[in-house]
Image (cartoon, rainbow, N blue to C red; front, side, top):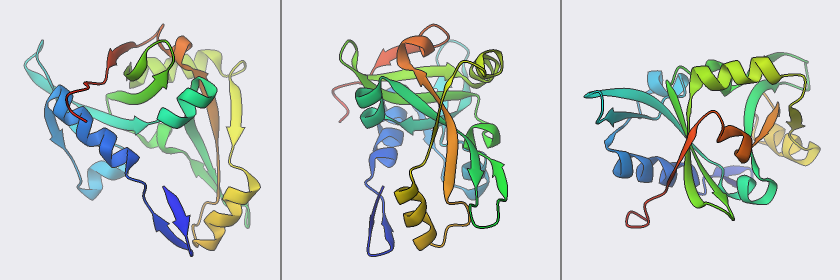
Length: 176
């Protein structure tokens, strides 16, 4: 997502990741507000179980390549009145996360994580995880867009660590 003249312009990376995911794994994109508020982007079909499961699809190609980790949004803050809310990680009702990441070793890859397993990992390792927050320039930009919450905070988890609790599948080169 980019900003231009106080107008939000989506770069399309998230939408592209959603489309590629559904094409590669089968399923259906969900765009209804109820699903979006629950951070559910798609229903993916399970060949093993003959059913489908809810998925939150994230694109972190840039940050995973630059920093070797993914960022998990845990808290939203309004710096003008100090009100806060939990981030999308805690609001999510998806069963799985499909993170599109890039590493030198694996290339363009889906990192697939069971949401409950990831949630337990965060609880067990909260004291040792590296934290992050939006930069003051980003917060100023968010305020200029009249966003209620202008700061985001969370944790960063290395892709190599997440591979110990999830799995990876290369992004299909035929699709994009």
